Image 1 (cartoon, rainbow, N blue to C red):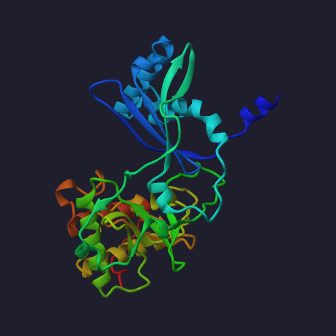
Image 2 (image 1 turned 120 degrees about the horizontal axis):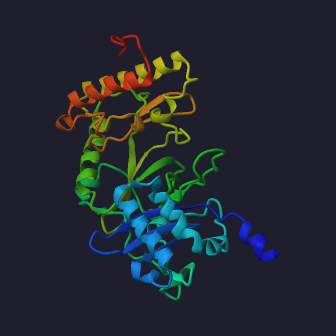
Image 3 (image 1 turned 60 degrees about the horizontal axis):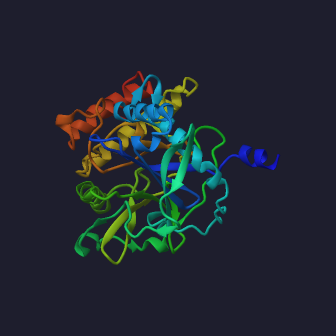
Length: 350
């Protein structure tokens, strides 16, 4: 009776940090975070030799991952299947004390390593290491010279406190990836983590925020601004500390298609976005990856333009116009149409 009750207890929130697999063999690695602990799951077809059915299912999920979607399945279905043997361990993890979680603990988490395999017809997770170990190399971080970073305040990962998140009443469960953090002076910021290998993107984004800082832009202009860097003594930049926008994960991409959104609200968003982009262009700043996902809708129903890391998204900015004013304007015209504003908004910029 007690075992059944424990089994029925929902596990704490967990999320997949990374999933990698090989094109040359059947090896894969799944990295999961739950309550500040990292679980690494190694898999290969040979692990399922005891069960042809489970082996077939594993190989099918690898095909799903290679094709993004197959026969109505997505890689998220694989995550749910593979994590099932870990759920009892998740339930036994100590709860996180609110206000006591530091970014350093996320970047260098305590880690357990398992092999996902079949035992007869049962899917199990077998420990490959006997105890918890602390990761010494983070999945994040790009080394930059001091002269590139001196224009910005720098905060060590153990000086950045992760703010507790309120569980959503509807929609997806909370991600284990931190976003809202507080700094040593009490400032609240959004942390954008930088993966290893993203050096060129990081330098391009820092250049954009340097231009924004130097430009005579209205302080009230609804754009993200850089407050500082998460950087340690090795010179590794782990993240950007940006304006925190209380948007409850609502973007223009999910807000605009709602049929009950009033016309006056749609027009307000269109005017705000257009005005923001025109002011950026007047200051010599290109938005770059202009698209509805990079417009946040805050609690006051104001539209914020974010993400100045460059790049483009097919369907919004033409590839040949990447990183140009012309590319921004093409995407802007498409966004106004996406919002559903019919009348012309020419002449609305300040």
